[in-house]
Image (cartoon, rainbow, N blue to C red; front, side, top):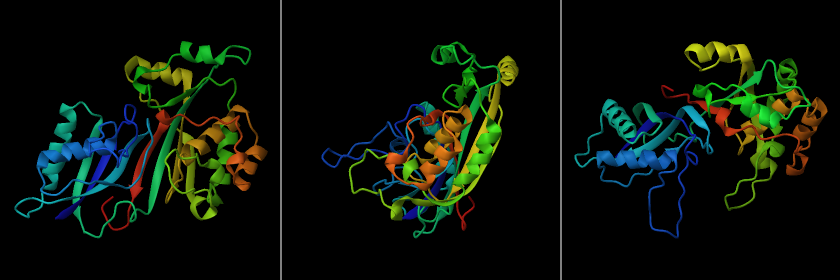
Length: 307
């Protein structure tokens, strides 16, 4: 038996999320609506003699993408020899390509049997991409309809969050983002999971340390004429957040709160109260959860591997 660390990337638009669903009351089946289920199905091509059970380093929700995530899996060949890493990468990617699945294996490496891709991770970096119209509709116009009338490059559909905001103060957002750096109880910024189980609404589960938040100008992924038009119409921004681990939907709630501040829907006092009075009741409902389409798991960090 040998353990492999797979570095993977994917576009999550058409998946329910990375984690497969397991129903103990049903007969075992592959969940091809999840990244994990598709990966385990592709690994069957190698015909290992053991049951294929992948382990995830990080969980992403429906519509969230990953530039780099990690999975480990134990595989045993009938002759006891390890699989060649390059062959693993090539065959898996060919399988995904045949099935037209937006999943790619970046690399594979043999790791110790004691290695765990989740518990040995030292940090995770998420990127959120959004764009703000330079000449948005005025406040007295119907912004919902105007958003559909506005130009959005087809290359960016489900890849970036586009705002038709009547006003947006990015400097205010950059200054306020520093509130989140350090150790805080992020209970207010945790969505309640729909999964059954014991409540995790307790400081021992909800205290996290945010190491870095960097808000910087981004760029369009549009091509040819669309690129110049997109640059003319929108200002692109990247929000990068790094921590050892995150709560359920924590990143999207932080980004949503910062965008609400930039839009003038809330002020810094409201942001401070949500952060310093940790409770699900402290969430200001003027703040909208940032859409999944703009969120990317950028990197999973390790000390002792090549990641």
